[in-house]
Image (cartoon, rainbow, N blue to C red):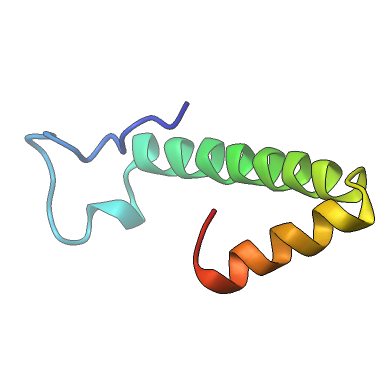
Length: 66
């Protein structure tokens, strides 16, 4: 599950703190790893689909459905 950025509700937050904030850098790294894992899972699901299912999925994507 996605966690909120540590900047949310932070009393020390400034306009440039994301460049030096260790909490934000740690959260950003974890968020990128989570996204990579989710993308790999989606790719695996797509690879194992039948050709008919792939066609319907692509049609739904073109129509804007998910």
